[in-house]
Length: 301
Image (cartoon, rainbow, N blue to C red; front, side, top):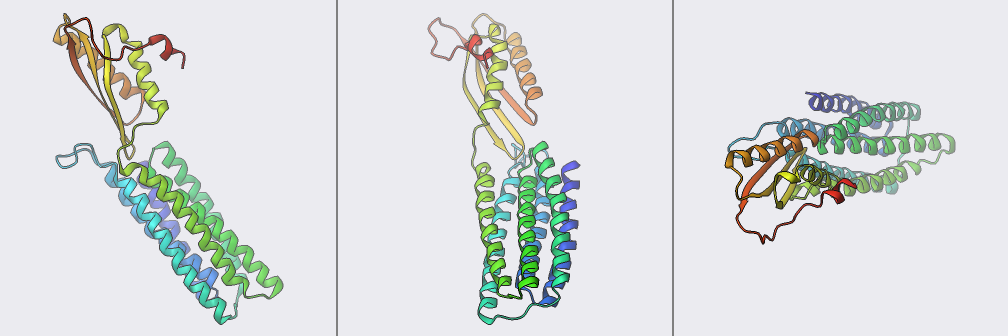
C-alpha cells in the first residue's frame, strides 16, 4: 500500500534524526539543538501515529463501523497537533532556564552539520509525504508532511543561530533561537488542529464536488422528475452521498432501479472514494414540491 510505505519512510528518517540531534545536542550543551531533538522525537511519535492511522483508515466497513474507518486519520492529525504543543512547552522551559544560567555552547561545527543534514532530509521526506497525502486524500499524511516542513524551518533557524554564535561568540543566541523555534511550532500546531478537526464532525463535500454530482444528475434529468434531500459528507478520504430521486408514477420499479444504479455508478466513477446511495420515490400527482434540475444552468459550469 502506497500510503503505508510513505508513512514508514517518515518513521525511519525521524528515528535517525532523533538519535543524531539528541546525541550532538547533549555533547554541545546546546538547548537549541536539544530542542530540535525533542521536536524530532515528537515527529517520530507523530509518524508512528500517522502510519497506524493510514492502516486503520484503509480497513473496509464492518458491523461496528458501517461507514468505514476514515476518521482515524482526522484523530491522528489532532493528536499530532497536541504533540507539537507539548514540544513547544518543553523547548520554552529549557530555553528560559538557559537564558538565566547562560551556559557555554561547545562543538558548534557538529551542531551545524547535524542541522544541515536534518534540513535536507526533512525537506525531501516532507515533500514526499505531502504529495502522496494530497494524491491519496490522506489528512494524516498531509499533517505529517506539514509537521516535517515545520521541522525544516526550525532546523534552518538553529543552523543559522549556531553559525552566528560561532561568528559573534554570543551564546545567548542559543536559547533565543530555541524560543523562536517554539513560536514557529505553536503556529504549526494551530494550523494543523484547524485542518484536522474539520473532519471530526460531518461536513459537506467541497462545492466543486457537489457541483459535479449535480452535473451528473442534470445529464440524466430526462429519466426522472426531480431530486431532493441531497446530502454529502466526508470521513477521512472516503465520501458518502445520498439523495432521493422522484420518478414518474407510471415507471416500473425495475426501470427506476436501473436509473438509480446507473447514476450511483457514474458518480462513484467520477469522484474517487465515493459511496452513493439513491432512494427512489414515485410522484403520483402533478403538483410536486421537489427541486427540478435546471440542466442548462448546470452545463454552464
